[in-house]
Amino acid sequence: MAKARRGATEYSGILLIDKPSGMTSHDVVDFVRDLSGEGRVGHTGTLDPAATGLLLVCVGPATKYSEQISGQDKTYLGLIAFGKATTTDDAEGEVVAQSEVPAKIADLDFAHSVLLGFTGVIEQVPPQYSAIKQQGVRAYQQARKGNALELEPRQVNIRRVDVQIVTSDQWLVKAEVSKGTYIRSLARDIGLATGCPAHLAELRRTHIGSLSVDQAYDLLTLKRKSTESGFASCLIDPVELGLLLHGR
Image (cartoon, rainbow, N blue to C red; front, side, top):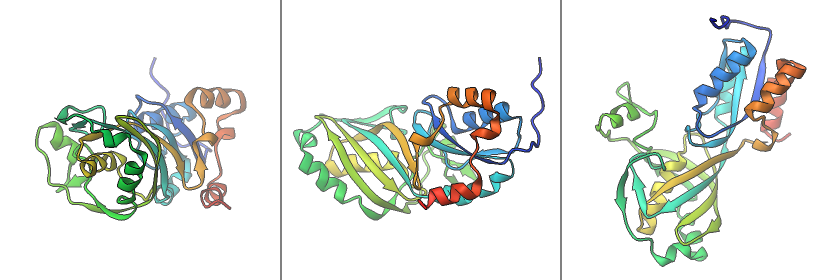
């Protein structure tokens, strides 16, 4: 049986969703379109398929606020694994460099000193497997063909990056960053700074502005509440969201 055509509805608002691992951000947008019947749906900042955490989805006329929302600072928990560098700078890629993990990786003071060098405004080269365009071509499209692009470094602001847990071969870090920052690139560059190849093993976005993933729906809960109380009950008014984002 064919799906009902998705068009304009009376819905207008923002959804806070806890994206599961294994789904693209566009998959979540399609899920919301199917659930609401509204065709005008978009997210405000991509999460990689393997990543989890807070994804804001705009519905109906509220999609006009997506660019404004996407400019908010974001906070992530990232697990950096030392000993291997990959093509994608995360666990999904092929290993391109490998080495023994030195004992200093397990030193908390060493971790603090390294992360201090990544605090503030820095130049960051995006991952080869990213949606960055160069001469109209996406970087990941060329990377899949084996044609690495010379991506220009971009200025980003790492407002804060703290180590949460240190083991013999991993660091769990918490990073509050500006728009356009790649945590995969941060993991790669931290590896370079330590002299040991590294990649991002896990990633979770915990905050966008002052909004927390603790306020978000997982997809099953969203579907259940939409069925029981109506889809509109799941939406946040854009004006209210603006106040929440700025912590007022």
